[in-house]
Amino acid sequence: MPDKILVCSDTHGHIDTIAAEIMTTPGLTRIIHLGDHARDAEELEAVVGRTILKVKGNNDFISYHIPYDGVLPLSGGHKAYLTHGHLFGVYYGLDKLAAYAKSLDCDLVLFGHTHAFDDQVVDGIRLINPGSCAWPRGGDGQKSYVILTLDDDGGMGVDRVIL
Image (cartoon, rainbow, N blue to C red):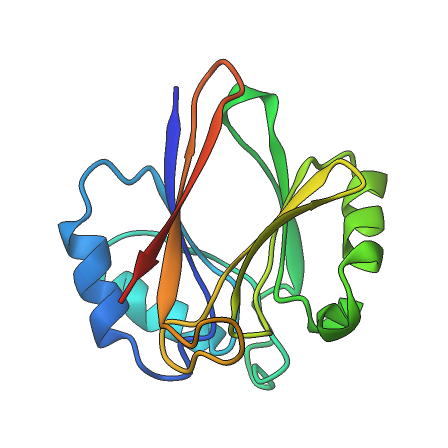
């Protein structure tokens, strides 16, 4: 079954806009929050009535029950590594993150932390940062999230949504 996944990160306490996006985007099969603030994901779950896959980031000090990372099987034989990214020094390059994902047999990484949209391939691993829903930095300075669409034949579409 194809996946249509909303991926967001770095909400930092500002969930109203992304909650409205979740509520008005048809066909979502999953929702992923990549940390800072992971507790926002828990609030979003209550607001939108959906389960949200979540990892914690560098500002998630008290979210002990939320993991720092995870591996997620996806449609079309893809496998994603989910992380906030701060433990991999993503401001200084994505090589370490790509190598770690490859060691886990993942072909996709979803990460945050930089607050800037990114979509690139490093050593055969696709790395996608949806940007920040609240506090964009670097790049074009626009608030954003990503809709990731994966079909059963392995096709992958990435649509950046500007808020």
